[in-house]
Image (cartoon, rainbow, N blue to C red; front, side, top):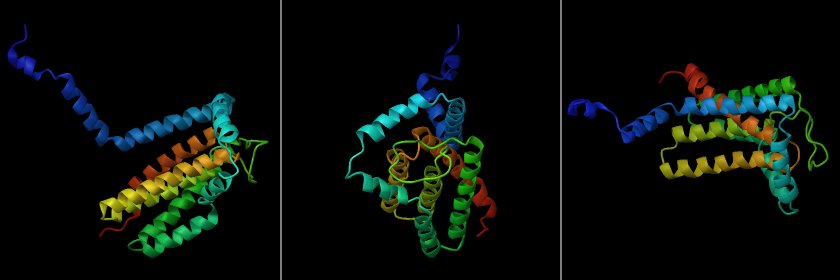
Length: 228
């Protein structure tokens, strides 16, 4: 029979749960990376094997068949334009002009160049044709993963990272971060709505860009950030 001392050393369910939550908080970036990579690999395998049509078909029925409205289409076109080269160039100028020091602007440019190159490489590897028959705008090139979605996560996600790092006002941090997060989500939705991407293209773009963003902000930026 265990004595009282031994019983005290046996962790209860509450302490185990607290320990698990603490480990999850301490390793949240690893968890995010793992989940994003698993989802991307799953989608990639299904796209390459042709078994992804069910998921994309459900999204098509909702975003294209049921959601499309004449008044909504210009709004979606406006959101998708937020990942256009001209808009991104303007945003880079704004970051370079208003962010403290020269490094944020340079990092933002390097981040954008890196994610565009990664998207191009992945598209050339997979070579998935774009959806046919229900496009509202003209697009060229391959479909998987969505370049607009990857750019949205990488570029606007990097802006969120800059805001959290440099903005001292907590309310401003929340407002701008949530606004940019909303932009990221709407850019992805707009690509499916406009008929130029499958839903799986967008989700895969989000996942691979999330991995890129974590690597960029946790490894690349610290490696090249000059010491204060």
